[in-house]
Length: 168
Image 1 (cartoon, rainbow, N blue to C red):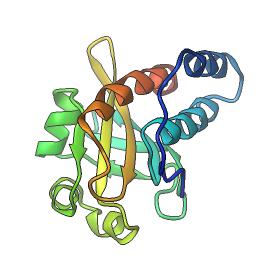
Image 2: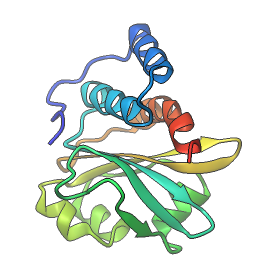
Image 3: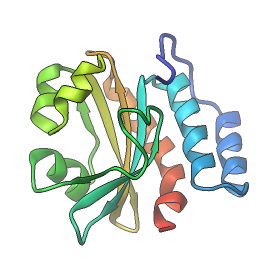
């Protein structure tokens, strides 16, 4: 699993420079996804990090990056029928933060897998460009982990995924 985020640090200007340089390098979208996985682990913390591309026409998300491919492989797809979660994240383009097993169970069909991995908190960041949700950056950790201030940090970091999620 990814960084357990046992200690957090502040986001700084050098982090933005690293992300900007990463976007300039070949090997996308995996290169920027790996950089965000590492950085979000240091700043916010996670035990699982995934990036999903949203296909609005099909009401479906497809995983383009995963820190735990054995449980959540790249290329995996999920239907996102109209639920409270999909309304919040995909339609209203707002962050979803859940910190309990009940939050996970209410939001995700695969809650048994998530909880079975010891993950009881989630931060789903909508990646939005030009008014359209392109996908999500997803961080999962132990129950109770995420704080309100993590939402704005997630939105800032998630913005670096716009080119990766627009690409295709």
